[in-house]
Length: 123
Length: 395
Image (cartoon, rainbow over all chains, first blue to last red; front, side, top):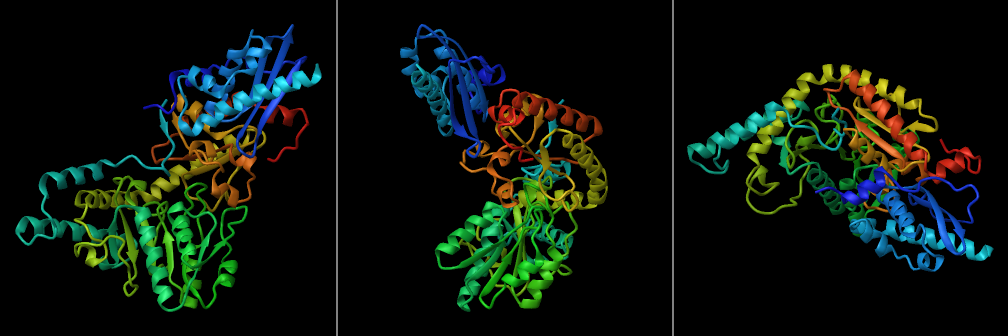
């Protein structure tokens, strides 16, 4: 049996929304290099709609795949809906993660929360 | 291209080993403890293998105990020495910070039971200082256990000097030689080794088979109680097929040792040179005093598990000291012991080459690692901070 689902592998090998938004309306970052995971999320928000999202991630395959999936799940959505994103939703959308990798989906949720907090503090 | 570069994890079984096992399973099914002819024939085979294995490390056949592998041998050696020590009021053990967990966890257990454990530093080159070893020995020291070759960074420890110091102070010396047997010449008499652990699958033998060498006169404690096999020191019907495979594999490894080393070491250094071209990378462990097949690098700004999976997709099997590969929180204790900080210990890659490695494969490895590191750095927030000057490079 493979370590990861096909979905995880797909989002790891071909991550969606990779990169930086230079004029982002909000930036969030969680994790640290000491633990081996850092996620940084950039959001572009118009009229409370997330019109663009990009990420940079330092971490394992499931951290990269979780970041990629999380960006897919919030892109084009209202801020209020993005706020409700849970780590379970990220993991489920990836067809599951190994137990000891669930924290990767938690980081993805927290990265988005951190970006949204940054947005709310600004506005 | 498919390249197996994880020979420190396990090796492909040799044809000689497989043939010896199949022959044994087909033709020598008797129980070596039975007195009739087919049992005695099995016993004879077992003893021939014991004599052959003993001769490779210059031991006596009766000094070899067959075990289920390196971990069992480490456990038995350390627990025996500790209990022998305790009987004489000696409760201090010296080891090193980067031993295999079969050693470290056994020591941890003993520590909870009242032993004092000194873990010698292994310094930035991954080699212990024998002066520090000698200084650490006190009247209560009942064991020194230092590995011959480190499994992650391949550094070779000064075993002969350690043996001499232990002999001088009358302290038993055990070495976990799992990464060394079949790859480096070992002479337990000349090197003053009292106990040594080995594992067959690291030299093209089968998994689940190994041995413990114990110098005559050193009392051994049983981990497994039962029948009188292995001179009463390890109960259970012997894994005869496994032992036959181990003996055949070891014979072949020892015969080809010098030629394999000469070939592999050139390619190892070629790959090290190639990977050193990657900016902000560093070889882990001494470049010279290391086993011929081992390469261990840290790359700044990336994480090891993603590196491994992308290399696997390119057909390269390797390993990493990253925490994410094991499900642990901390990266490799070996890399931390040589002073690598967490940030770069997570971004490590171990390649352990086999004797069939070619220059063409070496070029492919270098090219693939360069591509993958560059790709992962491309969307690493750590790397983008480094190139933007927001953070200082570590490597």
